[in-house]
Length: 105
Image (tube, rainbow, N blue to C red; front, side, top):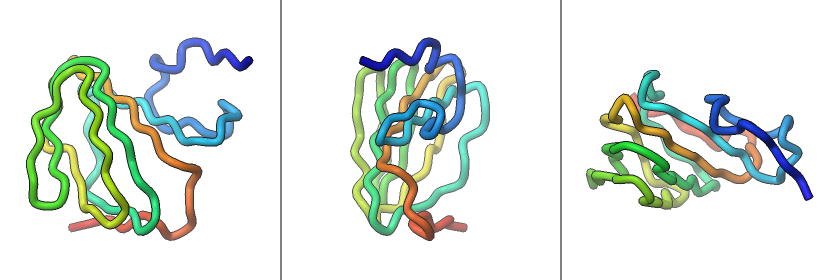
């Protein structure tokens, strides 16, 4: 058994300190989101725990509500367009792969 207390209170990506075989990201709507990007080989999972969020995946805009899960497949460009200030997003990905992330302009 592994217990990781208070993970949702620590915004950012978590991997080494958790000892888990996946990356966990915690992101609130109170701070800015990064630029649009895509991943060559990795899928990214967006689970909205609280609030509302607008996500663009490829050419489609999605309005996420609490409890929604969006799976972004490898090669799909994606970006957060808007997040309510009270939003709380849990991101899940495999461990990092070198040169997998491509930033978009």
